[in-house]
Amino acid sequence: MSGAGAGVAAEFRELYGAGPEGVWAAPGRVNLIGEYTDFNEGFVLPLALPHTVVAAVSRRADGVLRLHSAEAGGGVVRLDVARLEPGSVQGWAAYPAGVVWALREAGHPVGGVDVHLTSTVPTGAGLSSSAALEVVTALALSDLFGLGLSRPELAVIAQAAENRFVGVPCGVMDQMASACATEGHALYLDTRDLSYRQVPFDLAAQGLRLLVVDTRVQHALGDGAYAERRAGCEAGARALGVRALRDISAVQLSDALGRLSDETVRRYVRHVVSDNERVERIIGLLDAGDARGVGPVLTEGHLSLRDDLRVSCEELDLAVASANAAGALGARMTGGGFGGSAVVLVAAEAAGVVASAVEKAFAAAGFAAPGVFVATPSVGARRVG
Image (cartoon, rainbow, N blue to C red; front, side):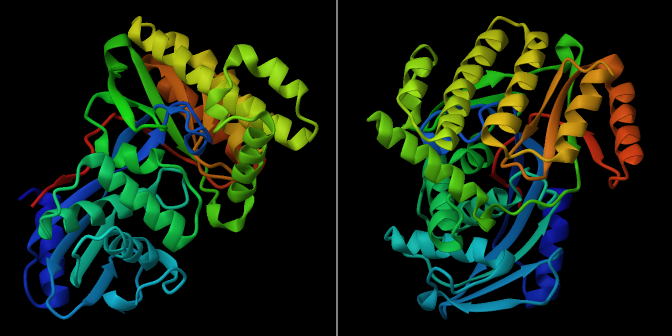
């Protein structure tokens, strides 16, 4: 058992009085490009982070679900599996409870379990702590109850938990990244059919680094802003007579915009169609071995998120602007926005200078000090003990 697995197993034993049947881990993710495209059946390019949610789990025979989080505090949450329903659980416990509910709704014979969780994924930072929590729960239950679910199936169950139980209308990108990513690669995902390709993403070999800047601005996607943008995108697809905005190509965009009368919907459509094109452009650059060329495309994506989708904030804009002014190759906000994190592509020798410039800019603006770390493409969900 790995060091992290052994530690969580020991905590489980202290908490519940016996050792767990197993320990699993699932990572957070950072998205290189392709934002708000997943629920439009488009393309995304996330990578898994080394930061994980770790779960020690054992089955119970009485239909009781007991959940404990080392970070959340507040003791053990005790629930009746048979009584789980959307809206019945609040806070962090809704995510693992939602997975249990979603598995049962899908016809899988899942019963009671004891779960102890610990996490190194920053919450509210746009790095998908919720998806990691869902995926690690789904993988543990699939293993313990012999469900034999594939990685995409685990991701779909986890998404159903967040959509239908927690009430956040997210796409499937975060869960797919946590479930399916591999070390040293980014995940090129077609969210329409969940086909994917592992794209080599060894920046170090090209003398580059991908920095993540956590603005420390907490974001909450359940407050309606995310849902409003999803509804606007769906309205645009209906008005254009297509199944999803993925079906509008970049060459068709000008004509499509001319057919839309609602200016807000026009902005949303412009962002989604152009960001799908940016994903494919970056894939072309990576396949050609030109990772440096990715930088300007990232900045272009940020401007679209800021101006068309309007999901950025002062701190994210400052992180991008100060990084680029200090010599970064490009930068953009990542994740759902309204706070959270930015990604910054830099030459390895400039990483320290760029990080320092961002920190100084935040201090000068009176913002809380950001967290800055290097994003290393890491392995997806797995059993660790």
